[in-house]
Image (cartoon, helix red, strand yellow):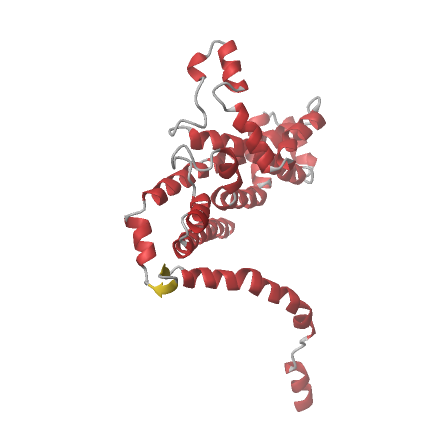
Length: 294
């Protein structure tokens, strides 16, 4: 009996051996840099040496730094794109799922922007948004002169102009994601609803959305991550943070602080705040999801 108990308690280390390379990679690529950034955020550079300053960097960020406030506001505006992206992807995928005439063509057209490089998209829209660009030209020909705006030069609308580009580029991924899930739903559900007299909107709210709930939650998290910590390329390629600091977001401000302003420790503190913001938003979303499932 004693030998049997010893065999039961013996741990099989073979799976850990196979996991070791991946664990080492995660530690050096993710865990170590995260710990290093957090520790560096409590330091500052004086006379070529790193000096411990405690929470001074964080204090300056919240109480003194106006560029941070601008970047934070702009990130908040970008987050307004999350419900827009989800709604567009949901409605578009539902319409295409009905297999309207030319649905394969529309599926390709809507998804095509997503496969284009962000830099290419940003440069093209930079020309389209110019005062003498094609957008203002079309508005002029249509007699809509009041819509001829300085899309990337007006501090009041520049971040909204960039958000429109992000939505145009990103929503195709959500459409394909939702469409793939729709294809696996039992068609008898829709056939029964049609027989009962349910219109398209009723089928959307009572069948499609409940069936897509987990995918919608997943896509919402992806959108939050993208808009908070994956929008740097749009800003850098289209406005470089301008006009002035009007289109600064946290990602771009971290980059400028670290490499243009030569303040790596201050940039580390900004990075920690961005990480905490994304982590909290995702945690809250997951908590709400688990609460709904209960």
